Image (cartoon, one colour):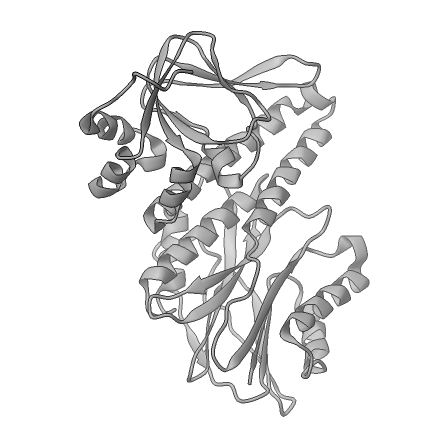
Length: 393
């Protein structure tokens, strides 16, 4: 591929970028900002731009010509996954996941390209609007990947079961890439969160840290309900939408309602997967609670009383226009809040009883102790479970 001698005017770049799914719907100012860092390149027919396993270092857009995306399959054969033509982009998956290229890109004809280098791409990804658009595209790409695994699994591995296992492995890998490293901080509170991962899990639960426009912080846990091969693609969308919405809001009151609308509008056709979600936002007057989809939560009072939280509506993405309520829960020194992303009422009561005896333990240790108890109780049959924990100083 030759990067020298191929230049485009700003008008030419913006006209092409406006056609790319990744950037569709972005404001003109954002498109112009992207255009300012795009490089030009050409590839001769038959030339390989990158090979499967290469590091992902750029996102590409075809100006004219064609690029085929191919992958090595079982037995050493080559399978054509897609052909990208004028106005179509490719290469974003490796950039997002910091992973090797999952396929090979080769020019079918003499092709002119626009190239967005990895470092510049990641800078742009920091903008909320673009981040959400990227997650939407990632969702569609992962869905297509799941379908491909399911339809070609017998040829590649000999059984449909092996194909299904591959799809679940993709979901687990994406789920793990979404996990925040640390819980947020909130004055006057101890916060902790974590997801109990299982080797055979579906990758359908996670949590996310939130920062609101007024500087307050919070946490949300998410569980994907319903049937589907890649539940983690919904987790990716949910996380992006929750963070993007919180960043422009100064309260939790409209958070779930807005995210519900976003998920409903971006549902993959034919999908029956929805997102149960619960949000906790600690503040001076107490903790704001909002949930949909039946996630279980409660406040454990220092005096030994136990108050369960209500669910405020259906899972997100199911019913567009639904208005989720919020509840302010007063808490005093020593009071604790526990949330489990999934499980029976009996399981939740058992976890709550355990937590009530951990008053003096560090917040992170409380979460890990709950996970340990779940594994001991259910072994390999334990569901992957996200735990949120808050304690008032």
